[in-house]
Amino acid sequence: MFIMNALTSLGRYVELMGRTFSRPERWRMFGRQYVKEMAQLGTDSIGIVLLISFFIGAVICIQIKLNIQSAWMPLWVSGYVTREIMLLEFSSSIMCLILAGKVGSNIASELGTMRTTQQIDALETMGVNSASFLILPKIMGLMTMIPMLVVFSTVSGVIGAYATAWIGHIITETDLTAGMQHDFVPWFFWMGAIKSLFFAFIISSVSAFFGYTVEGGSIDVGKASTNAVVSSSMLILFSDLFLTNLLS
Image (cartoon, rainbow, N blue to C red; front, side, top):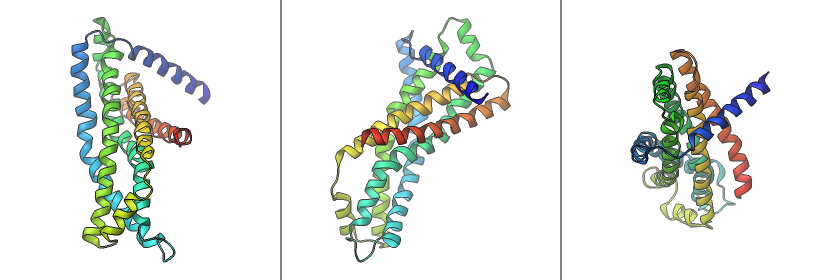
């Protein structure tokens, strides 16, 4: 029964994406919606991304310095490990998991409310491809903003690590800088950006699917929002494993 429901949902998802990625009927209207979604889904998330990344970068640096570093290791290990963790996993994968909760629930609840209040049905009655009109700008907007948020997250995490040197005196600024610069591989940055594009598509499309296909009332909208966050998070973790193995 579970497998049948999963296959049914997958088929409905693929069908919805087929309707979504059709040529917009009015490019000017699509452009307005695209800019609106970039601001709503991406720009409004900059604050929480910077705040979380700052403290995570500081905590990672402190933990490495106090619990892992020893007399047998170079003094720059804390900076090196902090940089690698922020680049390879936190700024792309973990940050997208956090955004799945914020952005995914927003998308699902918005579309679910439009479905239950028959606004989507009204668009269909007027001959508008509601899937393309409502979902495509969200997907494109989030895929545009997520790589930028990854950059902001990495920079904020590095600043948080330096705050431990400037304020907490956990590590010297010289040792931290040496670790940040040691054996830097530019591809790691691009790998995180590429992964974030896939995660952005997962968050936006899966959340839109659960919101668009809501059946019932306000209680069902809440359930759809929860299912969107859980499903997006699980798919991000699964795809992270696959993409890391593929891109490394």
